[in-house]
Length: 434
Ligand code: UDX
Image (cartoon, rainbow, N blue to C red; front, side):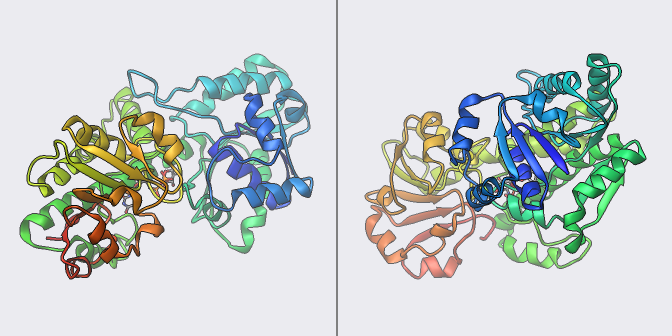
């Protein structure tokens, strides 16, 4: 199949490279000429494990191409994927669809022969209908179908998620486009994930419902963690004890500093807006959003409490700034709220993150950044683990203790055993483990 991917951001680039690796011929298009130039030079603009090799090998085998020129790329394509950004619109939380609609119009003008237009961007229910209308208006004689095919890629594990998905959701309105989509995903049949064919609006909603449910699961266990601290229970044991029930499932039950990232915060807000627009309010999701926002700020208070109620003039070492490990993404990272509160209360914050420093630097100008995990700890009044990078899981705790001015570790990801740390004579505060 000839596939054109519009938008060479995170989703477009990963999806394009994976489709090419399946044997399709893929052209990735982006209006940002400097991004395309970098990609043509073999530079990957985002940090995602394995993506550089995947891109390089498919470029070499002439199955993956990059261009800024959309019209010729659309003309020869069997399917054109729209994978552009849908950020939260400033002010009202609605998804900003201007990039999707602009892409639809340009595609419409360039269409030539039957083409399936596939919406991969996360878009509110009904957007497929609007994309169809825009294309029809731009090119009344065009022969096309519009399909919804949401992505469920986790940053840091995106290639694995693409190639071995739990399911592929496809919102189709006709048999012709269904056949094309089945052919595009046929290489997956070895791993036999279900191709879930539904109508387009259902597919659009599945994406939001999935993300809102996962955000709810995390927020639920975070509140249970707070209760564990009060009643002398252990949240990791609670997670295991409930997660082994197949109806609940063990994933996404790790208590922590609150969810962040490019999807959950934005998608929960957009779903709330859709609920309001259709007079079907999602009160549980509303609460999840509020509880998660409050939690990020509460994490700074946890650090302050561990330091006897004041951080004024104290040095705090933070390990991990990205919203989760294996990414350099700082969007809605809990570290942003934590740093803002600590700095606001007069702390001097020193930090290290294996990949996110250059993204974090402009967002937290007061922070002193270091090149390895031990450097920020030297002379610090406390060490705070914010993101659970593997590199932080086996720190030399004796060395940490000797570097710290006062031996306090606040571990917001529970990556150490309580006794394991305390036996070094370190005060250890974690999440939901009294
Ligand atoms: C998410 C979805 O998983 C993916 O399917 C969707 O397409 C995009 O959004 P991503 O944002 O990359 O992916 O990260 P994910 O691994 O889901 O983590 C999201 C946030 O939840 C992170 O801040 C993470 O630290 C937090 N989290 C996750 C927890 O606090 N506890 C958990 O048990 C799991």
